[in-house]
Image 1 (tube, rainbow, N blue to C red):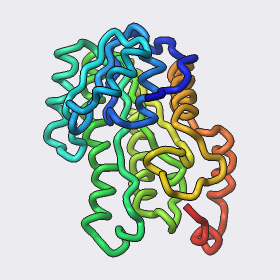
Image 2 (cartoon, rainbow, N blue to C red):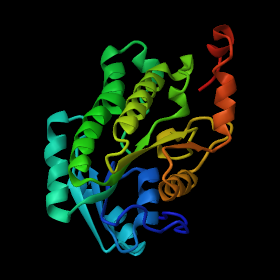
Image 3 (cartoon, rainbow, N blue to C red):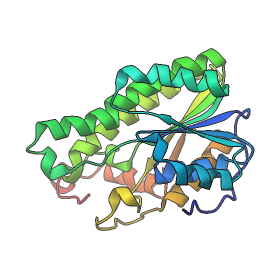
Image 4 (cartoon, one colour):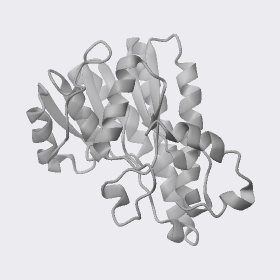
Length: 258
């Protein structure tokens, strides 16, 4: 499997372990490949025994070791034990990347309450649980960086994908507040607001303007880590675009596509 360019493969932070929560994520694996040289990478995902290809790709990118651990984002009670087990086994976390989530089916969610709740549970509730435990753990060690993926879908929620967008809006607000709460603790949070990303998650969908690839998102994230940023828009020109879009009348906004 190709993980793209590793031109930004320096080591932000103080060294240590990189934890990828969502071990099959295309974006997450691209980020891990750029951070891999000389590091321990921990891939956390369901069916973790089936991550052989991902593990080999990261070893090929220069990781000193790659461990695969079982992680079910929707099993809230398992989060703290998993995170502490990773630290006990491998040592302090340098970077934790939350790259799990689902897009869901908007049409189905509008008539199937269980599906709507499932999307919000994975994309918001589970993220809140992981982030809260991570913040506690990293405060205890006095260092570390957290990468959280919001979306322009949550900047102003659109009718075309309001279930997914509402979860991202909630996550954006929670992560923004958590980042402020972590200020001065030695721990920091990088909030990534990306547009449409071409990949498995969006396969079969019409490509939106200003789309990015997983490799482009990863490049922007690693640059943000190196410069100590708290926010990254991908691509960067989406930031002024959405400043304007927030001002559109609701009658116009409700007709906006995904």
